[in-house]
Image (cartoon, rainbow, N blue to C red; front, side, top):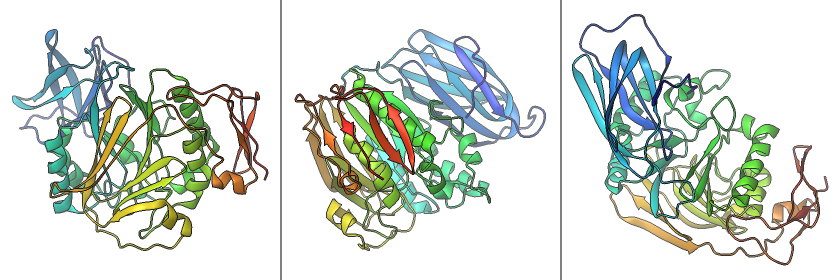
Length: 435
């Protein structure tokens, strides 16, 4: 959600006010309060009321209690700043003598090598009971944050479905920060806009002004949240932004791991199958810049695939009707190593160089656990997709270590995406694509 001007220690932003005046009757809380946009020294608290009303936000933690006034609105967004990293806080939203409370922990300082965990959840849509069971199980894990792979609702234009989503998620999101990717079902109207998604979620504004793709850092990991919807991912601006982000992450000594989340999977053997354009356009970048794992949804199953050193997980078992196994593409069949048709989520543990990803069923049992450590990187081979296009990749003698890109042998690299060349100056790889 678009931000306003900070007000001292707390920047109070009420950017969407529907209705007039301050509610005089007992306030009815429709959504929240829920947490957004977690960082080492800040967090955002949001809520929606049936009628506009003034509120007080009380935050208690290191430094004592601070009270702030929030002006009357139906949908309110309060960005709390000046917090202490790696610290626990309690908060309370007070409206007309009623209160709703929760708690949160701020993120560690960027680059601090501490263990952390997060959950990955996707394709909840209109599956009320399985959605509820999965979120209850996630809450028991007490993750540091949650990544959403999209399709939170079945129809993004229906407010009753958004209300249902927040009703189910409320016990979880009151105390846990949720970073969503936009799915095809989350959009609305003939223009397939994501206006409701933008209103209800406050994400880092470092992608573009639509807030449909963005990135954030937690400890030693950089997380890219992408918009993989067909009309969007082919655009040059998002692809160029992705590569800029990946280059910066690999040049940053504070970053050890890179995770990517988006709705559509490059590899899948379920109903929709792998998205070939994503596989051709973005997967080579994930390989080249040594992305640790890619999380997607869209197919309502659990899948683990591996291709060119990158692990791809499909986590679409958040509540929507489950899909069958339907392998068609030989590339998908070769890449997929594990498949299960089940309601589930992913539990991701990061400890130093080690990543552990478990598929957890709604009943709490484990589908499988995949563990690996990321030390000095092997010299990358030319991805098959690029080789087919006539590309070659050469590396200097010393391969890059995590968090660093080795110097290039030449000063230029051309990557052709949809007929548009992106000229990048820097140094490890000479990559030439012949059309």
